[in-house]
Image (cartoon, rainbow, N blue to C red; front, side, top):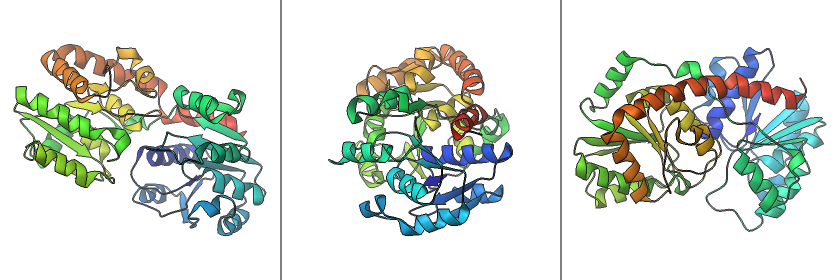
Amino acid sequence: MIVPTLEVGGMETMTVSLAGSLKRAGHDVGVTCLNFRGPLASRLLDVGIRVSLVRAPGLRSSFWAPGLVRHLRTLRPDVVHTHSGVWGRACRAAQMAGVDTTVHTVHGKLDSDPFYDIVLKRWEARHSTHIVAVSEALEQDLVDRVGLRPQNISVIENGIDTATFIDDPADRQRMREELEIEDRMVIGVVARLAAVKNLHALITAFRDVMARMPAAYLLLAGDGPLWPDLSTHVARLGLSGAVRFLGTRNDTPRIHRALDLFVLPSLAEGTSISLLEAMASRTPVIATPVGNNAKVLGHGKLGRLTRSPAASDLAQEMLAVINDWEPSVAKASAAQAAVKQHYSVDTMRAHYEQLYGK
């Protein structure tokens, strides 16, 4: 596996989960980072998966990354599986190192695509044996916007280690006590603090919720470039006492257990890892109708979908759930069962093994 980093994020969490499942299935697995390692590296090292750092920065390395070529020639892998952010440089280096099979997974879209994005993706695709999109929407984007052939793309939806996200009332109580939110209606999200996650709108919507429910509380778990702007937005709206930024967390199962309601306000998604985690935790969920969200939520049978990512629509759905709680609890139980059946890491791993040829 080759990734930019192993910081805490959806793509990186998926990579760690897939690598672990592959190792349990008997494969020899390693992960190579091209920018820096990051905190998730420890999860791999703890289960005996090697983690390497081979720096290959800049656009130039997309065409020539000699250090990565040497690294792969030393390892001599049967398969190189690359992920968003390293497509061209990693697949090209794998070919130059004599690797027969290269798989690339497209996890989502950038906040804004560079002007050369289409040309670069077409070039990158030429150096991949298989291309995977984590949702049908991403597959369609690769076909319609980039111009790739649909027969060259497979859709493999993300999966999670469902055993990690279990009901644990005692731990839920401990976590809420640690965060001093025992008596609050806790709304939250686990997400990168970036523009595509639409968190400004969530905070604005929360203001409208709190106006009707003063005991409400908002948790934002994650890190990213918009943290200062979001903090300013919270202060501007007078919400500093009711919104907490948790930063990067390695205990996301405990965060999900502490929540009463999970809200994913994104402007774009692939197959959201944090949404699957919330569902596996039996937490009622609300999500915007983007990417694979509608399919994952059974088009509203397993959670609520907003009409749009606008703050007004987010607030409307949050108030609807809070004011009519029992149906959302029932949907959450059905969602937990659906994730275990359709979105487990081992199901995802089996699909990738078919592409690997193993």
